[in-house]
Amino acid sequence: MSHNRPRNQLILLAIVTVLLTVVAALLNRSDRAPSDVAGQALLPGLAEVVNDLDAIDVVAPGGEVIQLRRDETRWRLPSREDYEADFARVLELLRNLREARLVAEKTSNPEWYARLGVKDPGDADATGRRIDFPGRELPSIIIGQTDPTDAGSYVRRAEEAQSWLLDRVLEVPADPISWLERSIMDIPAEDIAEVVIRHPDGETIRLRRAGEEGSDFVLMGVPEDRSAGPVWRRTTLANGLRALQMDDVRRFALPVPDNAVGLLFVTTDGLNFLVDLFSDQDGHWAHFTVSAEPEPEAAPEADEQGVARDGADATEDSGIELADAAVHGVGKAGESSQAAADADAAMASTDDPTAAVATDAVEPATDPAAERLANAVAVDARLSPWLFKIPERRYEDLTVRLEALLEPVGEDD
Image (cartoon, rainbow, N blue to C red; front, side, top):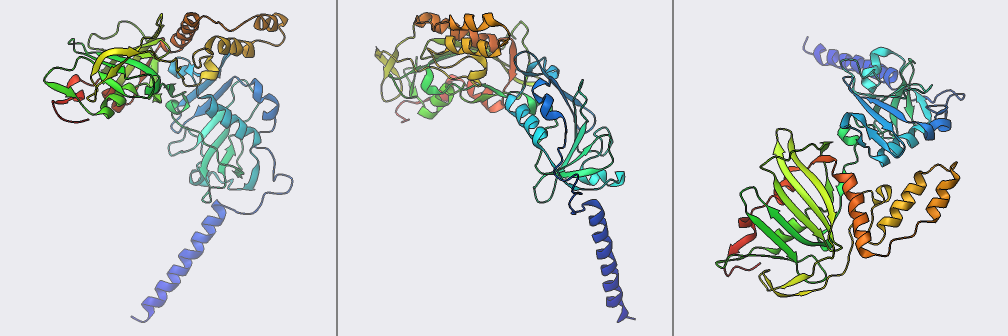
């Protein structure tokens, strides 16, 4: 009897192997699609209307609907009070949907949909995303998992039983935040002339750029019994607006909380970025207002400890760069007025003959003060209506206390 046990186990193993092979074949048939279907567009007709689309719905697992809507200038998210969407992500999705081709038939058995991720997102165990085109005679499609070779995504037209393997992978985020334009601004320390922090209890910290170039900063008002701490701490603060991204966004409404920390970043070309920072149960928030300096201030010289000395050098205009400058018409100093005019011209209808005439009449402003004002107005119009949720680490860097920037006398940077 003991001799039969290994033989029975081998038979059982063989049966299990055959069953698994049959299941895999049913679920993930590798045969090519019939010749009259292979290479067919996933969405016939999309190419003809893709430039006219103004509404896309992404239905996430569980049924949450992420609405993307386009106005006269850009795509937006109604669920985030019409804040702008990540144009590059929307463009990539539409391009891939327009160019996607069917490669091979997969299962048409609803019992196997969950394995490929092509169940309707409203179902309990669904993992796919459905894409709808409100107001258009285009089929809804359900984007499932990526095939094991990463060659393409599984997909099913929502009204059809047949599922397919595509010739590409389709990335479709299932949360609204991933569809937002996350970049707020990108101003490196090299383009900052001064930083001021005012805490609610009255403590004030001031950094000023040391010299005409570079990103070294001096700490003003160091107590006599202390010295400035490591350079990297000051540089971290001066880089507070560098590659700044948000985790969420909501409309700004007065008043600013009494416990908000106030910051001022002055750029080398004379823009003032005023920031109010505060926390609530939803996270860490920043509100920006932007104005223009009449003339950029000179930077002081500093001693070896990073403490300001008498005397100042003139600073050159180094300009600032904001995220998505081309879209918003905001670029380096001296370019903003013309960039704004070019952006307006690009959005103007070609059917309006007066638009081209008016655009041709625009000349770049030559007055530096006018340039600064135009830049400030454009940037403020984009930022000031909003509260931006920022990462906790960035919030902590921007609300630093003076003590963290100091060392006992005699310690080196």
